[in-house]
Image 1 (cartoon, rainbow, N blue to C red):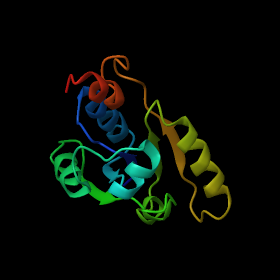
Image 2 (image 1 turned 90 degrees about the horizontal axis):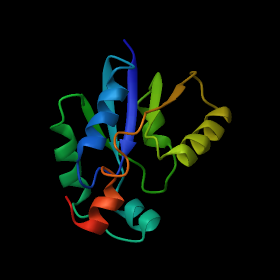
Image 3 (image 1 turned 30 degrees about the horizontal axis):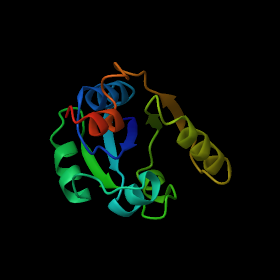
Image 4 (image 1 turned 90 degrees about the vertical axis):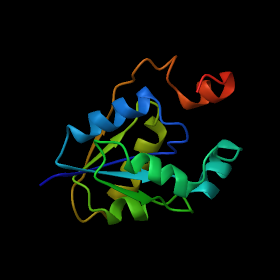
Length: 138
């Protein structure tokens, strides 16, 4: 059984998120979604999430393709992601920098080979959370 991990803030679930999670699920049998904690959202994006981490976890848990939801690390380490013992980690099309950072981290001591895959964008100009929040088309 292959476990896939996908992660994000998931502040406003939109068709782009659904496509990302569905693409991730196609790579394995079990999909674990890792939700970015509130403190990390504020630090990375310079703003609070519209919904609390608990609310976002509940929303993501309701997505059909998601089998389990966990909270990410407060300190931006990959501890919680790697604790899921994934076979595959799926990044969104806009997460190339995070994919590189994780690849470097994994080279420094991963006990199990983990495959990294990138999801394709789904109408990125229309369905991107920053765009939707800025333009209030949620």
